[in-house]
Length: 431
Ligand SMILES: Cc1ncc(COP(=O)(O)O)c(C=O)c1O
Image: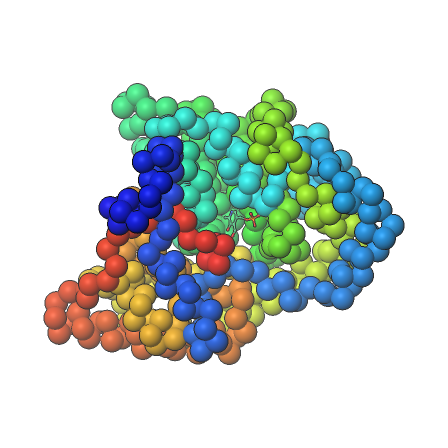
């Protein structure tokens, strides 16, 4: 912070909320991640090259040629009405029955998170989030000066007993909880999924404490086994605000997501969206609408699932074969991420520059906590590199960790690394 203040001549002019907007030190390292010799297991970018790009290109060209006056014009702040109908069909795959009128289209789920936090959170309000939690959500919560209280998760997702205890404690302290933010399915960063039994418990506990739930579900259709899981929203339309996205099922660059909210909340979200952007890009919305109307999108999602499953398998096989004893990791059944826990005495953040020197990159765990926890954790993503690159990246990482373990055993502790935590603005490269 001090360095920030010294180098920024405008620092005494900013609003208080800008104080929480600091770049991560890790971000500097990511400039090097783009080098071709580095295997990046850090970025969460979907593999959009798997789309039939020529077909999508023709489709968009045709759209502009035939309906350009609509596609290149302002639209409504709630979003295109036909697109919202299509979104209802997508959510039906997860058991959600919704009216298109209760949906607001957003610039990715990220903007939905921003608008929701804007309408619900005053500075100092408590927001509950899983430990660990999606870094982009933590950034949004910090920018609205929320007080994030973490609730632990395990292989079965958020732990209901811990949620209940946390809510009891906050009630005793007289602190108002504005909402629980959760990524129940194929979580970012932990790769875990809330079990069916726990889904019912989480809904019951939040109902008992009258707490809203923000269900962020960009990976729900990217499961590797069987049918999509039932969304939390499918079982409680009044308490759950559902956030969806086409970033992982179509293309992240189109920046089309949505929020499904109780009617009154949806009305506020539209007003908030209007003041933020007037309306969302018509061309992107119409491109998604056209894609969902004319293209075999269910088959394309199946292709994405197969592609990511092969990459997940490559990563898990390589971890099993190569990681030294004492390293543990989650086994995702969908989505993009594996969450690794290092042995006692190792520090993933301190290790990051040394890993990059060995030409492999990951995201240190501290970025996924609002409270500085996560030093022994790191996130690996398997969504973007080819399987052979994944295996090579894990091989390099295993070598780095082995080296850290022998340093620890020789010198009795983790070697120092960057110390300042400015974890909330990682940049789009590592979402
Ligand atoms: C859990 C989660 N929520 C939201 C987002 C943002 O997605 P979008 O591209 O729809 O803004 C991401 C992106 O990686 C994510 O992982």
